[in-house]
Image (cartoon, rainbow, N blue to C red; front, side, top):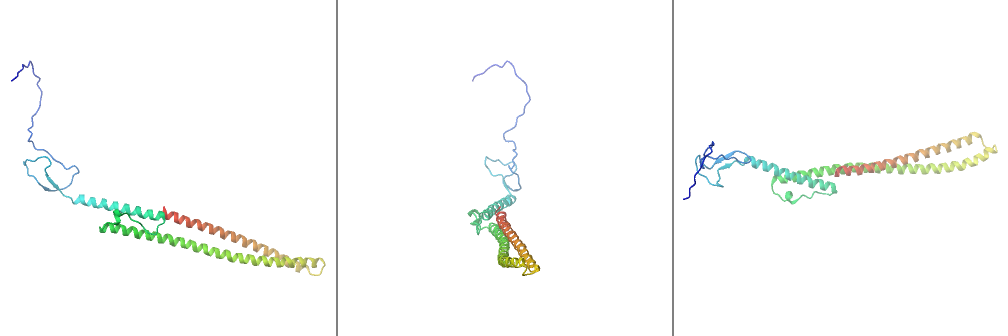
Length: 221
């Protein structure tokens, strides 16, 4: 074979390790070893199964994460139903079609919570609507009183005109004229109070209607 002459050499430190040296192995995410499948000194090849890990912790974590996903999907479906004013929740098939008791419990819980919130919302709105109905009844009664006061005022005004003429002719006493004038002034004041009360009641109706809108907005937000 070929050969060559070396004119010099460089001396350096180093070490030799045989290829069959013991190798350390470690699971990438850690855990508890359930069973060792090889013995010390055994020869192994690539892709051989060396250790069987305990799946208890991993399975528990998977179960918790899966349940959290179900809860998020079910809650999102409930919030969408509340936002859109739907009568019931339409759950996604990823949750509704599952037979797992935990998944069904999540669906049932969100459905109950939705109904409770809906009933509370409807009850609050019903109370406000009843307040509006009462205010409208009060307005109707005050309008009837206002109409009666107007008729009474018209009668007194006509009578006052005649009595004024008679008093100018000294055919009636001044007290008679003064009494009619006081009645006319009283009726004018009462009509003014009724008109103001009607306006105030209408204002309360508008405020209550805004409260109903706010209740719906709070429910959907």
